[in-house]
Length: 326
Figure 1 (tube, rainbow, N blue to C red):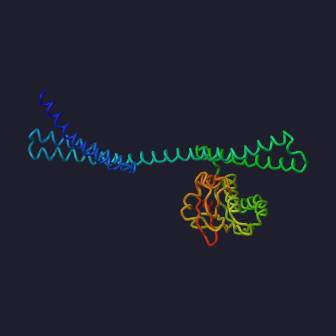
Figure 2 (figure 1 turned 45 degrees about the vertical axis):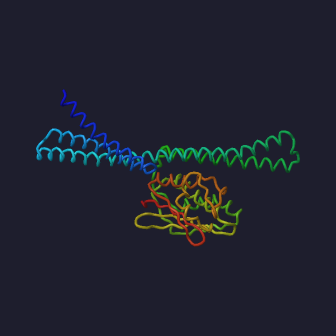
Figure 3 (figure 1 turned 180 degrees about the vertical axis):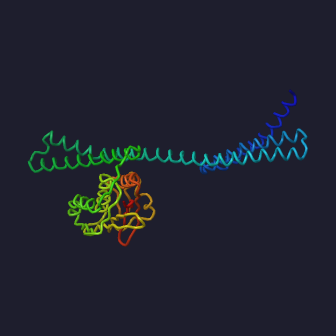
């Protein structure tokens, strides 16, 4: 019994020294990545085990050969443990980071939606009270109030529809049915929808008359993507500008591009334009859009097995989507 207690004491002391050293290392690593912390914890834990076994082996006065066998065996097990632990630790770190980012995005989205709903609701209430109290009585003013109420209601309806679509995407509930879709028809319908907004802003919509490929996609989702890209470009293009739509094939894929003359996107913002509630800065000024359109575009494209990217071109920017060709 006494020998067992001594063995336990030796192992405890050796492991304790490694643990205290590791605690100091962890303090120095404060603020570093989660992966680095997980790897450090694994090294400390495995190191404590190896130190304990080595201390006990030496205390037992094993022969040099036996001691070497013990240390090699323990070291091999330590290497395997560290490799497996590091692999799964990195996955855990990525999951933790994703969860933290998702929570931050959720809080930002809730705050943004609360702000964007509060403003039109306050306007609707003020106009309704003015009509109810008879503050506005002449027919022209009453007609204008009714028009503004309808516009605000349409804006809120669009916002709710976008939120519902985004929630389906984020929840993984979107299951598009893929098939052969002619891009010409999708672009034609999208241009017809965006034409009134473009005309009101004196913006030209230009698209090729032929050469449109067929893509493997879901027609409703692809229509939403193209419509969102066109509307986004029209909103951010200054009056008198031009929005061009083009398409083609490249390495077995089909692509469609929407280029505008917005003046370009700041380099620091290029990686964020598809984030939820991001409305841009500088040339792409805040308030010009709802902040969900491009996030929906990215989600819908990924759900269809495609992708979307953006880059600056001369005088503006170019959004490009890619989909498999049938």
